Image 1 (cartoon, rainbow, N blue to C red):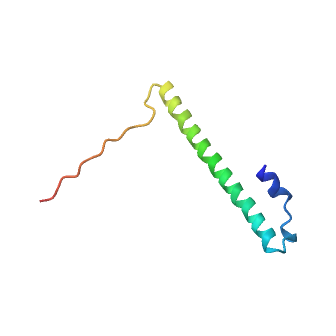
Image 2: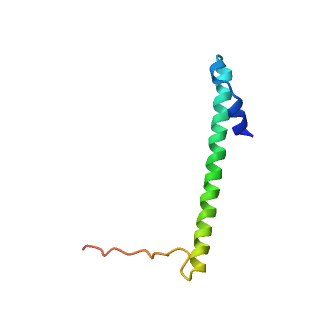
Image 3: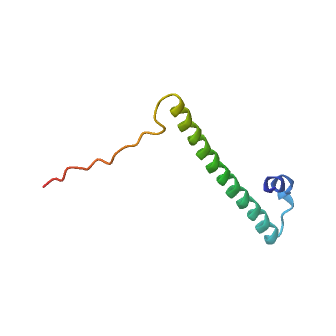
Length: 73
């Protein structure tokens, strides 16, 4: 797993641009994985909050209608 690779990296021993590039790629991959996981969890939390609201007898999420602004002529 990417996070395990980060834990085993020895940043103090990086002395080559190629090693630095590899380390940076690992870190960027980790950020992407964590961001995707965060998005999935946020979606799941919202779905559960909607379900809870329905079970309590309310609406899942309020739907707001677009208000048309009166034209100034």
